[in-house]
Length: 157
Image (tube, rainbow, N blue to C red):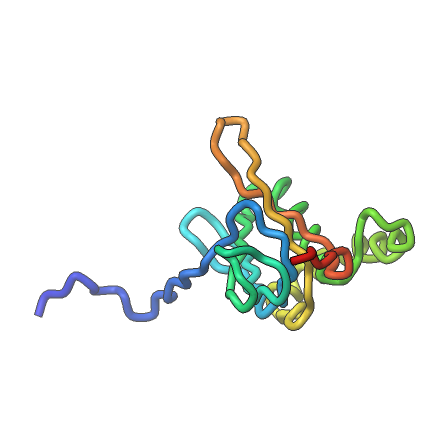
């Protein structure tokens, strides 16, 4: 019997995450961080649940994902490090965190690997703010800004 799906056995099943759009300010509880081998290079993926804030499109209880391509290391490593620093509860804006951030920098390759392989941030919470940012090519890009969960202030209803 001829089949169009010869070779499908053993292929990775595609995950279909729902991604953040601009205009979100929320607290995300991290469920999983991992690497996914994609056609255009590996992707660092954060999966989580919105536990506070959000908006109509991204309400409390919604599962959402963030993907960061790792092909362009200059951009990728900076973005993933910013996420990891926030997941550790540290802020680049707080001088009292400077020593811990310097220690993170010394160990960052180990921490980044552990976040992807051992899921060390499972259960941690982070603040996520998303905004629209035009690229040099004039395309819209959703910028994800990570910070510690304790920097979020509940907005009056």
